[in-house]
Image 1 (cartoon, rainbow, N blue to C red):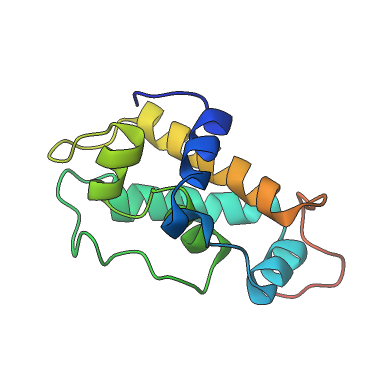
Image 2: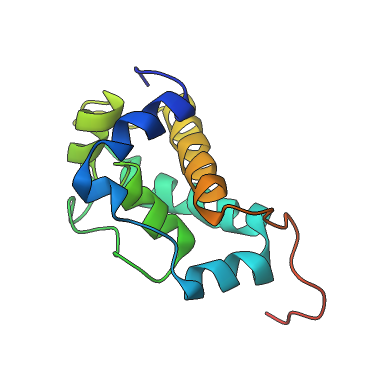
Length: 132
């Protein structure tokens, strides 16, 4: 991945009116609190691997829902939702699979955005008594 550290990218993204309008809704906040950041980021790992990592993802540009999971919201907020946005915001060209380093860098940006948007401590483990 080319570009700068997650915090520098987040600052650039804030200048985009479209990207800056994304925030975690109450459902996403509860999901984070109940399942914990570690589990949410595990889901993010799978989403990036399965939906973005291929050179030509299925339904590219439409593969990331706008809501329903904290990672989906973070992907739109961070320009990590499709290969076109990855090229524009992260400098990762389409047409080649994402390397493990690319995937890890994207996940670091998603994690940084989630932590910033929550504005409070996010539990790393599930809340006590939560059944799956």
